[in-house]
Image (tube, rainbow, N blue to C red; front, side):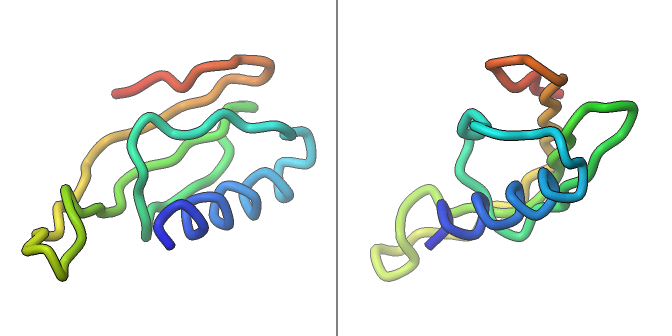
Length: 79
């Protein structure tokens, strides 16, 4: 489910930018993140994830990571 949410959010951001296709996966699976475009770069920030499933005792972790994908890049920069 997390992968689907992440992909849907990135897809929506990419549609708005009009120039993104074949996006590389984020280094960390997240859900509930914010995504947008600034100066031609796709930016994904925040969100949350679980180190293991909640039914196995996993605890939600809030993320303050910023991922940036420059046009034509094949890897995300992490801040």
